[in-house]
Image (cartoon, rainbow, N blue to C red; front, top):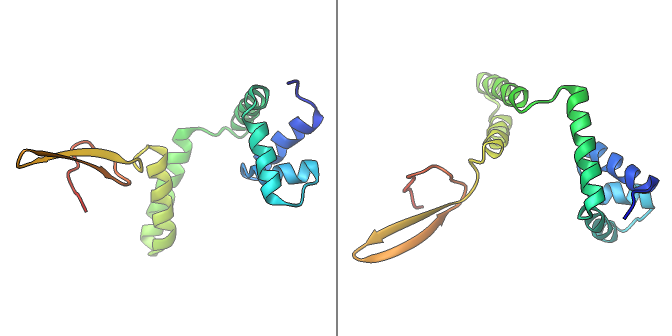
Length: 136
């Protein structure tokens, strides 16, 4: 498939709308039903040419605004510190959640426990620490 002007506009809208594919698709193609827009957007986003163009545009945006993983982490750490000082628990928890996701600490961990000759496999949701034996 060759990219046309609407495909490129879809990618721009997708980036500008915080990666909301249904909204981007509905704006570009004039679709009012978000389920239909979501299905159309999903079809576009799996095509090789769309993925490649999206990757290029994301890198260009990162370069333009000088966005790096290190800068994001440092900003989040400052937000966490400020939230702790202000007692803002809601934003503190959200910032910690984002930081955990960035480092893969929210992934599930499979734990094997042997008790009286019986092996038990358990997946601890939201953990990724080696040796974490806390079973809730």
